[in-house]
Length: 453
Image (cartoon, rainbow, N blue to C red; front, side, top):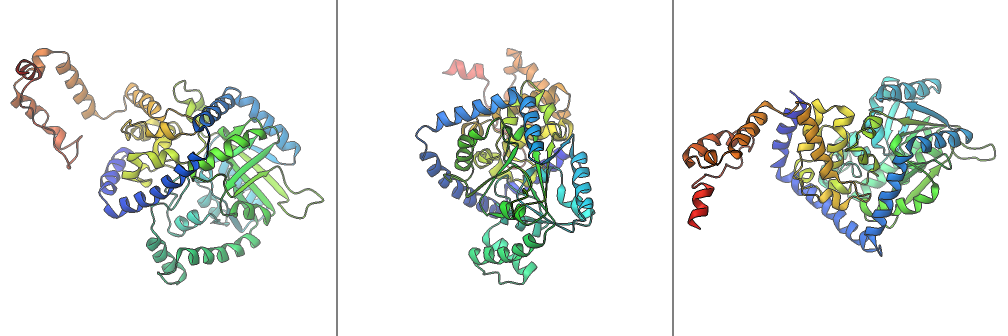
């Protein structure tokens, strides 16, 4: 089954799952309410968005210089900087580090980049247990699933779902409260932190002028994952670089506001190297793996390069009516929702994933909430054009569009008897429109209606 057919099948199945929709709508409504309060704290939110968008575009205009500056500063701080062309090379680096340090246990803070390179299976293949320490990530790992949402990995699960999962895995009561479950997981993870050989994080920002990796999180698991293990590996997409530490004063509050509605996230840390001789906490070694994985190809695209400005706040997913209907897993990609629909065809190929850019109503809600003003709906239109130019659209669609073109160019064709037009559009009821609605019947031509009125 092709990715396109699987997408259509999965979307059809989940879109009419009432329980799924209720869970997603409930969880996103909580975020919407919090974000509304967060936005109200800004005296001029649009000015903040404009400023953040400008700074992100400034980064892209001098991308190579800032990355080289980061490497120079980070190396001077004692960090080993590794450049990974793709997933394979990134995994080779990680595997080598794990083997060199004879690692048997790895604790990992939340990171979509590590999901992108599929770090957990690779670590397990090296004989190293990889444990997710973010509560949401811990839940989906326990369930044998992948993150459902960029910010909230277990958004698709209700408290009852998690209670049932914990009962199956740990034997605790299904009626255990959310607070009690959190306390239980904290106890489980505390033992993992103190015995782990390696800690892995992603990076919300790579700060060029100090050679540091900025990580923002709400549970303290990022700090814990880097305090006890002897080795810290940070894996970051190369688009995460920003010129200066002073810009965090703009980005951190805006990321928190648009992602979770907070004034600022609970834990904000800048890692600038392994521990020094007079320090007692922190890793003995620190590595930063800078991941390309087709990002430079996206950068070379004159239409869609702006997507690299994304801060991964998740606001576009929460606003998207398509995402809320078909869910995160239907996309079958690391990054879902509007931003995923734009960048995944570049990262994983238009032939396999170009259809994602058609999973959009073009309502523009994503662009309206994006904190760095990425015109996501317009970029999806550009991707659709690319798919057409590459000859990747379905044959039935090509025939239908050609047929419409012929009709639209001819007044005579437009004025065909309604019965003939109704017959011509019958296939829409069984293919493009799906089984839940029917093509409306033609009764009169436009010319006839115009003359009558």
